[in-house]
Image (cartoon, rainbow, N blue to C red; front, side, top):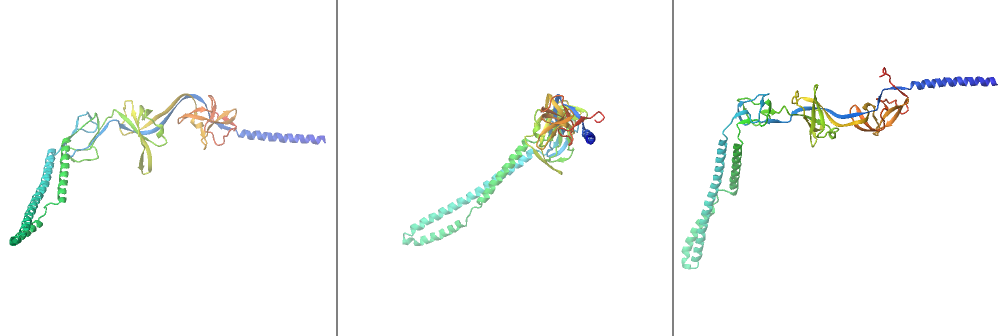
Length: 401
């Protein structure tokens, strides 16, 4: 009996050993190799990286005058000074237009006066006939009181009837509507006269530069007649004082502020800049791909802009913020849940440990950690879905990395 018990004890021990070995082997297979980094103290700078277009800070479009181009004094690339004549014109003497407008105004006034005089003459004639008729009526009334004067009264009645017939046939030659039209004609002629006088004071036979700069466009030809146009005849731009013009979307609009430092990049060259203007209101743009709401931003280029060309696109980094001597971790170590819980995985012993963290300033590569870690902690980079708090992990060797 004892021998059987001993045999069973040996069998159970063997089975237990086998199971133990299998569990140990299984657990060994669950150790996950991970890439890590160390929590460090240092500085962080956060940038908004985008593209912009180079524009002149001082630019002027000069639009064509009415008339024939007599001479074009500049070409694209010429350096000009304020006061320099750019284009000369052959124009009609503006005094002629003033004289014509004055004659039209005087004629309108004379026409109205003629209407008034004609009506006044007719009114006087009507009043004279009315007086004659009234006098006859008084004489007839006096004669009718004496029967012996009946014959004279009858003769005066006939004369009165003739005068009344003449009076009834009379009417004013010009109606109130015609007089109103004459007043309107005077008002219109006066407007034309004032306009001609204003044009005379503004009369120009040449286009003159109002700023120093370089001619970047010429759109007129000698001998050609020109009219008012939306296309500039000549464009002059200051190529030594430039700015970068860009647009930001709604997610970045609240990050950009006047006064922020910026770096403007063109090829291998970098230039210092500063945000100088932010549009007070957003604008909606429509294109073939749909509509977009954007906010305009301008950056003054502080360095001498050698090598920068107007209307070329360049890269811009706007410094949104910076901190010094803070705890920081690589951005690729940070995870966020749907509930906006932010956490990282540390390595403690041979296990992954989830740590909720509070972040400060973030850049594309790094993030400031305000709470949750200490200097020297090991953090797991790009933790996979298989890693949970308590998962067995080991740091990847040089070959694994």
